Image 1 (spheres, rainbow, N blue to C red):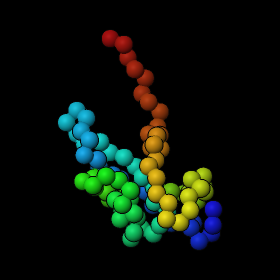
Image 2 (spheres, rainbow, N blue to C red):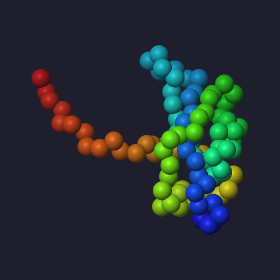
Image 3 (tube, helix red, strand yellow):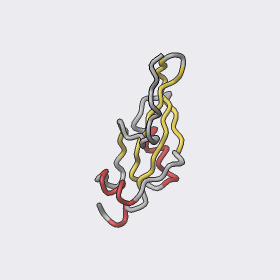
Length: 93
């Protein structure tokens, strides 16, 4: 990955117009551009009517390098949500 791109991959939360169990589905997208332009870049890639906001989560330099994105790239991060810690044991009643 180019040095000039370091620190310039933004995460964007997208709300779709697809509903499941009464709630709109959410997606996480990455945009290889500055924070001020990331939402617009993602909105240009998703269907009209969907909404997007910058995520509060930031990628580490190692995570950005693994994405291998070029400036201006945008993609959905399928299955990319960070683990939420160990799951509590399930009890059978």
